[in-house]
Length: 310
Image (tube, rainbow, N blue to C red; front, side, top):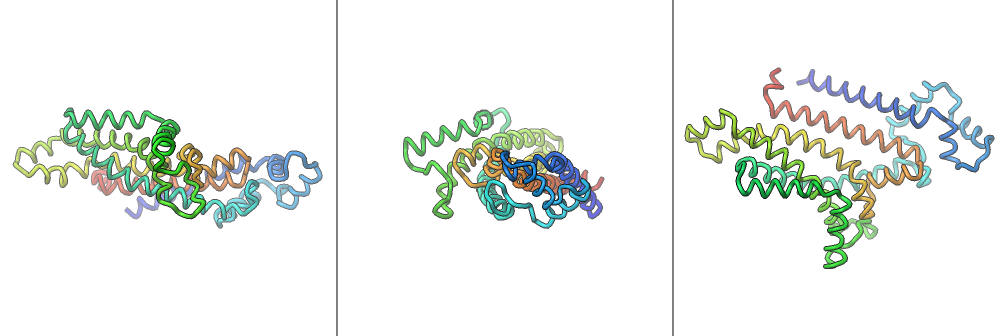
């Protein structure tokens, strides 16, 4: 296991380095373009050259890259063009807001999805299976912006039960999380239900499950001790990968409900060509992606002994 962890850690470091090189070449290699974004399009060439000289853009490319990489690694992401403040001061607060939104969604989506998927897989072909499958397919087929509009129409404009925005201007308010979490739940839980259902149905047809049933073991014991662990192998990977979606794939939901999260920050930085904020958001998103993938691989080895023993 230690060798496996070392390999995964090395893979994470290499991935982050490759992404950082590509990101630097894409956004930083053209110093003139950076100066225009920072100073504005109406500045003179002399003003841009002075800024480039003061910020070290006339140095060799590899020197600039390593200085930039060390700054990123130390948490110094530069000054935001859009907010006129250090990027770190804005980024971590927004990341924390998205973490709250994602945790609330996870706390509801994962248990419900696993429970419904297991029930559907246990009763493959039954009326319950058909209802759960059709519901999961239907909710996943509806994009977030459509379900957001529908829920807002029902609970905000028609019934007046919930606020239409989730800006948290008056402090943290759990009520303002209800609509964003509901939209994310409706869109995300169907895929996890289908994965769990397919995995559970496949496990229920294996010879060792049939043998356990024929030996007279209690059905509850067969499910909990023999079937469930193997059935959770595939859904576990999907559950971990959903973290990436809840980090940067919720732009529509955060923008629709005016939620000050990471996805909305990335959109705002892109629209305003906030180059340093884009760099920071990209590196954070890649770090979360490779970290969750590593955790998924480790968990996979514990759930599947064949991989661990190999």
